[in-house]
Image 1 (cartoon, rainbow, N blue to C red):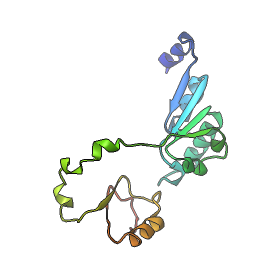
Image 2 (cartoon, helix red, strand yellow; image 1 turned 90 degrees about the vertical axis):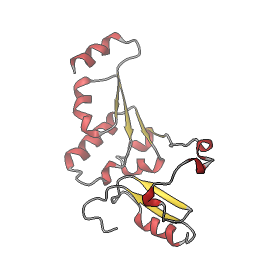
Image 3 (cartoon, rainbow, N blue to C red; image 1 turned 180 degrees about the vertical axis):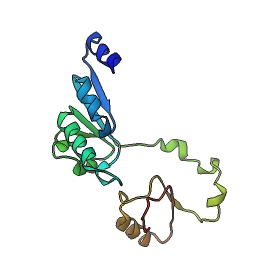
Image 4 (cartoon, rainbow, N blue to C red; image 1 turned 30 degrees about the horizontal axis):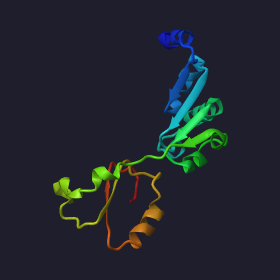
Amino acid sequence: MRRAVRKKSTGDGGFIAFVFHPKFWPNVEALQPDRVVYFAYDVLSLSPGRDEIQAEWERQLVERADLIVTYSANMLDYMPARAAEIGKEMPTGVNFAHFVDAQQFLCPADLADIPSPRVGYAGHIDQKLDFVGMVDVVRNSPDMNFVFVGEAAPGNRW
């Protein structure tokens, strides 16, 4: 921590704290940076095990932040109100040219029996996923096969 505080006085652009989780709020307070960027990589308010302390730290972080960056604009809807004022969307992207020739990729053995076309999801399977919306998409896409890969949250009935 002292090393970071010393760096504050040596730079000419000020000291910027780049924070990706509210659990670092106590560090932000201690460091007293000139600017704070909060990279909200997930909708943490919907995460299992979230408690009041984490919610309060996120509220304080959003209040102190100079910029909030998210993967999608609707993530800001789940954050304290000020997030919408200072939040910016940084959508993820893909280099489609890299995937044009899908034949170059070998299919994993455990997926080989699932007919194409396949739609895949890889990630944590919990209440942050819109299960009702996914069921609607699946029902309206009878020609597609959906594959979900990831750890299912405890108590998840899907």
